[in-house]
Image (cartoon, rainbow, N blue to C red; front, side):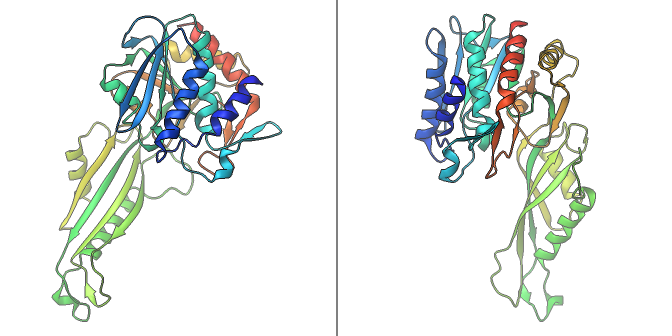
Length: 356
């Protein structure tokens, strides 16, 4: 109950990306919660603070890192006034993932094994100035537990992500005489349809590549003019099993997508992040599964369609899994954490840490 009260104090901090002071305040709150007697290394990148906490002298490699992010997506003021209804604690960040962050901090505080606590404040906007920044400064581990929501299941696989920008060129002309022009917009929409035909929009959850057409635009402003240029943004998520994208460079992926496009349409790939995968039979994964099952939970594997900071570890050959508490409504108006899962999560994580 004491942790629940402290969680509500942390949840009341509106630590969104556009409020740097609140990001600092959330980080300091958890560091104060951990207490003294530990080494605290602070990092900062593009205004986003983060910290690495551990016992003993300065070091960069750890058998285990507990990773938590303290930033949240924007919400109305009412969602930063936490409330308990029955077995649910409602607030922005309750499920994703401030409550789990405090549990991880408590487990770290009580640990007698060599574990580090990694606290970041930019996961919701990409993670490059938190987790990735620390890794680029030499931080690494044998295994990583990320406290994102999972209902005490293990997320050992998540999709890769990249943005494709399609640019079409044509020839302007009067719309009454289209044979004298060459519509860039039609080339673009044909190209988009070709991509969607290759990767259809699922009608239900499916572990396959998805394409979201996020934007289509042109500089043309006249109704009676054929557009000479057009641009589209595609957000593409892909599983490790999709060999069209997995293991390929930006240039290779751009060339592949251009092969699906109409003439005079070029493709630029931005923000390419590979999928994340952790071996399901590693000693650490099996130990974490046992710990979850000892608390009456299945410990089953779960795939996530969204990207998380585990991908940065995967790129460096480090197994990382998501293992967190239960709840629902993340990023929505009724986000909540299932209070009944907090203590089992704490006990399972404590048992697992003791095996390291």
